[in-house]
Amino acid sequence: MDAQSFREFGKAAIDYLADYLENVRDKQVLPNVEPGYMRKLLPEEAPEEPEDWREVLKDMDRAIMPGLTHWHSPHFHAFYPTANSYPGIVGEMMSAGLGTIGFTWMSSPASTELEVITLDWLGKMIGLPPQFLSCSPGYGGGVLQGSASEATLLCLLVARERYVQRLHEKNPSLTEQELRATKAKLVAYASDQSNSSVEKAGILGSVPMRLIPADEKFQMSGSNLRAAIEADLKEGLVPCIVISTLGTTPTCANDPLREIAAVCSEFGIWHHVDAAYSGAALICPEYRYICEGIELADSFNFNPHKWMLVNFDCSALWVKDSRELVAAMSVDRAYLVHTQQDAGMPDYRNWQIPLGRRFRALKLWFVLRIYGVKKLQEYIRAQCKLATDFEMLLRGDDRFEIFTPAHMGLVTFRLKVKHMQNFNRLS
Image (cartoon, rainbow, N blue to C red; front, side, top):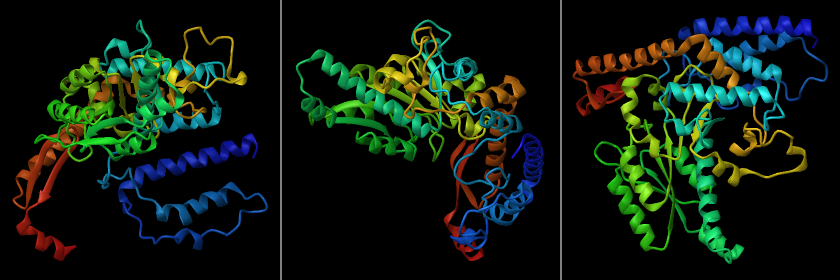
């Protein structure tokens, strides 16, 4: 494909996407297909000869569109929100077209420096304390991950390695076998209302995840956390990390950060805050009460790709001390060394699990510039108002009862038992 064909194909693809997004509300959200449907529509082998891009676009309608779940339909209410916007799409295109792999500053200076600047912008927008920002004195800073799942796993691994390294520094005579034995005793903690990815991080990191029963507000209380930690200490186990949640998946509950931070500080435990959904609301000052005590945490993460008009994947993680990441994640080879390593810019390969990384900051940068803070605030506030309006409608309908009142953009409700029989008959 030459440049001219690319121009034609690209323009046709843009038109295709614009038409799709303009008309997505008219499509049935869930597809009427059975598993394996596509094998009947596509050849068993890849084409031997080049095909015209027009034929490929035709197959988008014939084979792909019938099997799509339309996440961006206004009629889609499953799982969790996923963001999208025209600026984000263009930013994604730019990232793909430029094709940089910015694992070190030298491998792509612009991608590293734009990410540093954009994460500082975003951190200031949501009111993060200065110690989390690259532009402030100290070792704080932000980095884009693929998802909150990756951010949680990364922080768990870093907390695990931090404990082992500190133990070795205090006891240099410990053998590798003794250190491995200690590592096997590490335990992590989170609310039983936390996302499934939190428990999965414990599995992948070989650190058992103790799920603390939530209280009547669906929060992980400091007292319940303390009791679990003290019980584990009596059993000879080693508390390693606590993951608090702002905006739980079931009810959008917020763990009390200051209360939990006090427990973490007392026992010397890493405190990570997973605000995957609710974090976007922090751009509105009236919602920042939910993160009181965030200055005491070690790391904080939220997903602009959930509620801030940036398309997946784009998960923002900030840490107070990036040296902890580098110490746990750094593996040096001659081909990774460059002359500017100590010039003040991060090599993001040491701030993440994979080596390679895309230029994700572009789409975030495009969205922040083309919408601006005020328009993004208006968007979040409008979504929250829709939730309160919906709650009012539910309260006016005697078939339903409110399980938890509107919080952020979520209302949890249920059908009253006496109406369940009619509902089952209709469905």
